[in-house]
Length: 444
Image 1 (cartoon, rainbow, N blue to C red):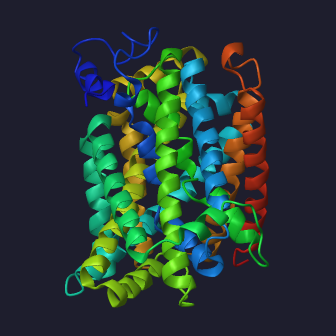
Image 2 (image 1 turned 30 degrees about the vertical axis):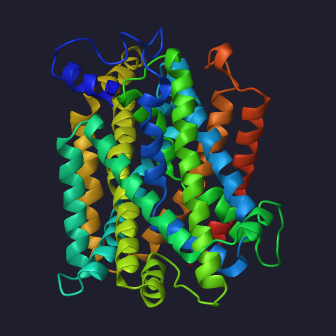
């Protein structure tokens, strides 16, 4: 597949026009499905080990009953990612530029958030990626050593590669995740009638928080805001790419939906019937590996651990790349005057942003300071700040998109219709409820 992102490498080298400029007005010249890519990147980044465990636990506790919530969750993510991508393409402005137009409070929030969140998340992502490697190679180095190695590998990979290579690697990791999880789901033998019955909305006793988590949690992180940046990095820079972006987004989250359904099947069939409980957090996937080994043998268990690694490492490099683009845009707009801001999309489309000092500086911030947390207990105050700031991000994203896409900041043709408004309003309210619950559960 020839992607516009490949053109970006040429443009960044000073040869030929910036990608997207020759086709932005007219749209794509090939069948739209051939351009699919950024959606897979954002979906893979958003689905981490913690999401897998949450879905498994929901399946283990309630069987197929909450399958409908997983389906609604995919629709919510489609609406959010579509809104972010539409903002970038319709306005020629970045997500951060949109936030900044709403007032200085957005800049203050994002500045605090991106520093603290990145510090703590870096350690979490490295540990999560290291866990399956330690399980696959128990006689090798320990968890902390592997965690440092995965962080450094992620740093080097993102530092030296442009978007087109990054997208191909992320797509390959999505393929591994998808094939492994669907294989395991087929292996455990889904109960098709029960699964179909699970599409009818029902709330069993004690299931409310699990339901909200399934709708709001899987694939929903700061990287949803990065979707528009990846759209521009691909070379899509005008309204002519709107249909391509929407197809890309839908295919990605339908894939994610199948992935989530497969994990629910595993939880329902393998854990619910046997009343097996998993540990909370990433280690719950190691528990599942042990269950698979006992039930289906070492090959299936090792295959699952490979899928576990693909899910964790794709989240790591996705954040290393996507949030670094967000940070680069943040620095660019804080430093420059409004007259200079229009170059942000061009920098993304040509790949210049990926070579900039802020991009690489934030890569270093995500990698080296968090290594210290691998060897120390996380400070209590830092944990609280990380939890609060993280809980507020998804409501912040949903509600600011609702604001931006219903105002004069967006060309009238591309403003929200009733469906987009309904989905974004529902998402905003859902994430506010989840935010309150997450803050209440913090170890104050």
